[in-house]
Picture (tube, helix red, strand yellow):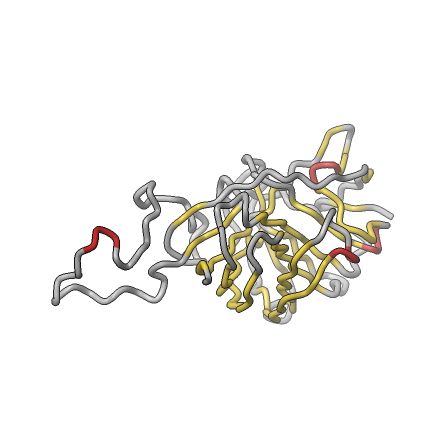
Length: 255
């Protein structure tokens, strides 16, 4: 059964989980802008309330609700580029995954997640949006369903988003509040799942071909992928598909 990218059929190869990761420090993304999350603050990322040891002036603005948030991402670009997403032409259940190694990301203790932001390249529902679920889990070993332990889930509705021309910037960064504590040293997995599409509906996750610090995974049982596979190992026309899904986690280091 084919996996497709707007009409193309793919051959699925084997996949392996990479341990390489990266992080950005800074304030939460707006979510409505395609460049949300690009680092533009001081490279030190020092968000400590007592930095410098001095009290703030008494007439200083109080810190905003996003002050002190840490952003974790494996995406080196937050751009969403048209026609870089992958889906299963036989529809059915889809799940997309990213694996965040907290230790590699410099999180030394537990991590309290507050929000997940993910890219949507395009959505056409005919009814005001498509239901989806964000799932946070911890992982023990390679990325297989039996190795996942669920922490929390949150339902959401992905709004309709116009598809962009191939190679054009567009899409949407969709924010979902979700609260869970990831234990220190854990592999934290973000999954976005939907139960399939009816005839005439379309949903493609937002991605690009820029660098990433850990692979994107897709699971689509209708396309004979009962376990997550690495999207960069999907081949079409003799070439590997390059789908680097844009995902970020906002949270606070716990104690």
